[in-house]
Amino acid sequence: MKLFSERLMYRPWTYEDDESIEEILGDEFVCRFLPGNNKKSKEEINKWLQFFVISFNDELGNKIFLISCKDTLDVIGYGGIGYVKEFDAIEIMYGFKKSAWGKGYATEASVRFKELAIESGLQKVIALADVDNVGSQKVLRKTGFQEIKKLSIWGMDALYYEMNL
Figure (spheres, rainbow, N blue to C red):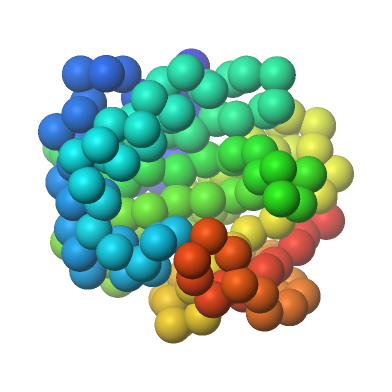
């Protein structure tokens, strides 16, 4: 299953993508906005990759993609729709290399994942953003999310958003 948007391509992760995920999750600056708020260890990165590979298109509705630029095929991030047991809901989520920030990729991907959620028959999706991640908060509002509350989860203070589809 591959998806496309104007500038981006989305495909399932494979175990051969270990270096790509390590470039993203091994970056201390990127990880300050992710659960745990710190650079991921090799073991943690392997667990994330294993989850992305094994859970793709499972019974819970997970579809977390590798995101690359269509023109260069450079891997710039991950994202998709994923089940969050703490809320019994599907989340639109994404993470990008620092070099991809500020170029509109997160908004483009978030809009494509909203379309994917609609195509998947979902009625509502959620999103979470670190309270200090102003860029992601802007992306979620542009996508159509409404901020509901502030909460602490997975070792981070986050804003919780919902969107009816």
